[in-house]
Image (cartoon, rainbow, N blue to C red; front, top):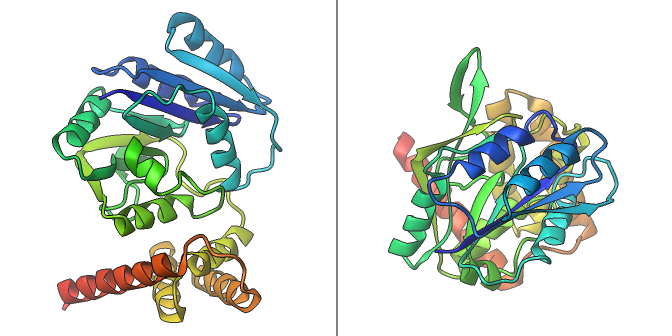
Length: 285
């Protein structure tokens, strides 16, 4: 299985060397790695250049997007800057963040999963963060969800879902659309990825409202949005997050902003979400 990797990077000098070292140390090397230096003002580019000089399959693309941290659109814009340089002669496309450390057998294992099951469309491991000197599971998503910082897509699946949407919520929309088209999502829980910069560190409070708007854009109804918002607020132990999410959802619904999915896809997503919620309730009771 031939795989290519794209890494958007904005001011990641503190982490990117560790990320790239974990890639060049893989037991099964990529066909190509494209690092998109997204208007970095620190030493990110210097570190990238060291690796491009030492490893011919690693290349750099510079882009001068805004230096504002815009969750979703900024990172996917950068991703596509790198994607445009690929020859498309690959079986798997991987989107990586520049603040992770992969186990040495990560891509060999992922590629074997794709090879052994042609219905797997998206695959990945689990994210762990350091707390008090120990690496613990990063509880921002269920363990059956492949996280955005290290997502691998079968090319056929990537094409069928229309690629990655340039919007906040892209890493939920891709999974739901993959399921809509009948692809499997596979999480190998034996693959522990070290996430060096925990999710949300750079986010501002307004982003919670934007996430609530994503619920509407994905086709959620009021009750699914309510339960999803409550779950996130409970995880964060913060009632204001629940209020922000619901405010964002209701404002988006009132404004009837454009959705990320078709009506047919939205209907599938609602049915899937309800089924998942009922399954979890039955497991509890």
